[in-house]
Image 1: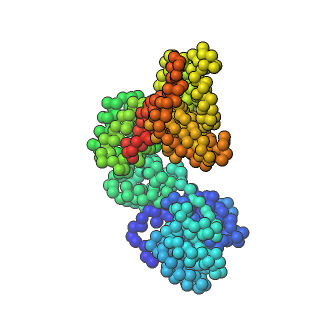
Image 2 (image 1 turned 90 degrees about the vertical axis):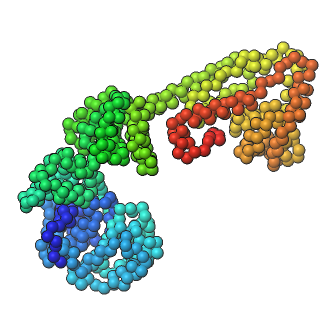
Image 3 (image 1 turned 90 degrees about the horizontal axis):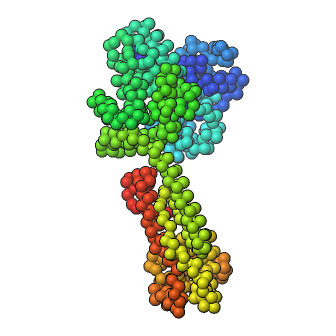
Length: 595
């Protein structure tokens, strides 16, 4: 097959020997060693990102298995010669014993059946017949099932090579029958070095421009670890320019990337809280035709660099950046808190997710970056921790007041419940202590003789209720508090509880509260099978009248109103938490409760 007058660079510079497979040395050495020892598998799976050499390696495997004159590389491992008739025909893709199947377009069970019919024939030209199935994860479930037996026990001298960018979609039964090799993303430095070699070779052949090293560095970054993408970009830029030398600015303009200096300027405006400059720089980018997604994508990568360098100033082994940029970035963030940088990465990434569905992406990006410039992210985190600490201190103070005032255990339980609830919403709810006159109502009972104490009489009447509330308090303090001023009646295997407040009645009728009460009741009375909640204001009033007859003792404090107040306050405070507020804005709805 005759080659076209001008071949695409990624096809022209496809690796022709394993020694040319840059960035995947762990795979080439393993396969070459297997060839040297004769331990050839009947099936291989090559998985990894696009453009990292999976299909090229499959062809190299076919070439080395069918090469007539194997050579040794610098490590003493066998490699194909590249000059014999078989090597040349494989390179020209007209070798009869190499069958490439595109599973994206031939993914049905009938396609696999046709392959099974042909696979039984012996190789026509070479020693091995190689089936290369590209994007194998696109096969249908029935096609995989039809392929399974053939893959497990193929005919002699038949080898399958499965290539995929998404191995998670390949059934485990297929994977278990293959030797699996993971192709890695290639480092930017490796890609740039290879690009420099190709540019030099092409320039020597004529009619190919030179490239500045910084321009090739940007191309290597845009490739995101794939050689094929890098060569495609290089080919496109060289074809569309009539300049003798391609500069960094030309590459940035064609790839729609922001330069390092531009990103540094924008980030400086953000961390220095210079809102006017930030708005100005963003507008200049819009005028030049940059899209919000492009700006956000490059900002995210820059903030990531800042975060990693703040954590470890020697993180360049991860970033692979020029030393000058590393030093300038470290100097730029020396006075910035690492929490702020972590929050910045999180916020910009969240912005990118939202921009794709926004009707006014430019306005959204501007507003979110201005928020970031105001320090919103780090301040929100620190303020949250500070408010939780203050709340814990206030609750501890209320406990001390309650204990000094000899308040009953249920008040302290209420404070424990308040503390736990506030921790759940991570919010500082300002619970004011009860007025002293209310607390004193529990201690004035000391002045009444035991025989005349109406509270004592009520306690005798409601002994069962007290026991139930005590046990229930270990399961749910809120439910135990809601049973305050209630009446309890045992009727065979049923417990009847009468409450005198609509709020308590509605909450206790909920399935979860009924389940909590039933669990507590069974700990006291194992034969209880049902809990019934009644609402009887009259019954509650009768108990109150009997309790307060012939005495000036004030009625005990009813904590239900306080529970309602705490509940509403907590919900309002929760709505002010940025994460919850964002969720309500996006999905709608309301806060109906918390645990």
